[in-house]
Length: 277
Image (tube, helix red, strand yellow):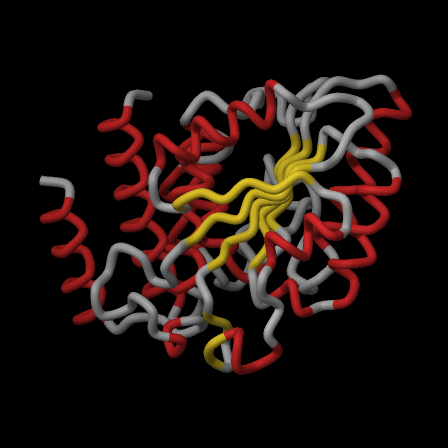
């Protein structure tokens, strides 16, 4: 997709995220909207090698959503990528659905690992990268973490392991929106400066505007091209806005885990439509 098509795709995904959360009456819009440009770049910007017709294809790139509560972003992305019908999105969190509140790899094609216990995703991604090297299989492992999630000690144990093992095919993207459920991350348990911390653990680090899809595609494509069997893992600090794209949600911690009302959805959809007109 070219730049305009990627922007339109991200806009459509935002609409689906908000619609499915409103239909469910629960979910996490703020962090789903902040990371959706990252997923758009990965899945529709020509970065990742994947095949919806063969979700377990050997040699594919892997994606792990460490911040599993942003499942609506992943579900919308996978549906638009062709893993399952987009009509299924409105079953989010309903009885009997495959689309649970956190991604379930036993139910949803394209979900590599069940996630949601914050702090564990980077460990899983590091294990996958180590396993690919041991098996001789191709593929890069991409994972998206929340910045609040980086308050978890297990993140840094995994970071230490990945650098020590020289897992050069591991790319961790930090959705650095500055907010978590309890407020500003710097007030709750300040993990900043995340770039300096990952560098101190032996990672290569780049920083990018997490809503500049062209910059994301360039950064993540270069990360994939430069991935090696043995080398430093890469941390991409993506500076984002919680609730991005909907003015009344942006930079408001209260939208971390609250569904919009029908009236709020109408307002949000109209704003998104106007932005892409």
